[in-house]
Image (tube, rainbow, N blue to C red; front, side, top):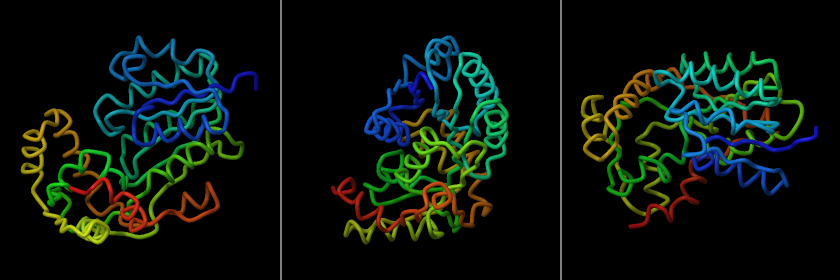
Length: 269
């Protein structure tokens, strides 16, 4: 291999910035793909960023289940492979039909390809759009009493980095979850224990969630897109555990309680 440059799309995102840190610590050249240098909504930014790149970590914003994502993944993958990229690692969503169609595009691209298929990120509670609700003391979601095997983003970044830098991961679909199922009420209780504050989970209707998200400043298109995603994946289909972290890394996945203890400073008022 004459070029070890790795392109990380979404390099400012939850997984992307962690992958960048790991790659740089390993001595790899990293090209950061974030706006304005790279924009999923502007395909004129795509050809230049994949030039002289060996591997790409593909994260799609806002989500692979959103309209238009599949076509963009197909075109980007074609551009990347024609430019000489030889390894692709795709961050995907668990049991999302459109996401799994995108997985097949990447896996069938004719180069080494790995899919990192993930459950709900733990870090959504302290780094993402759920931080403000946690800080307010009320997490309102259209999730009912469904359970979710929340996965730690640190585990995701470790698996993605291994797939980007090591042989033996090509063709693999690693399904990543945490080690146990929790309802959102139980997740809120774990956060309460870690912080010493009372954090409540309140189930709401999709209409109530969308209205609240828009009022809080989320763009209307994203609010309705999240609603559609929740309706798809928070219906019980993900109420099972997977062993992708151990398969890829030979160690167990991190538990939500450990995550909550380490994230607790972010939730202090």
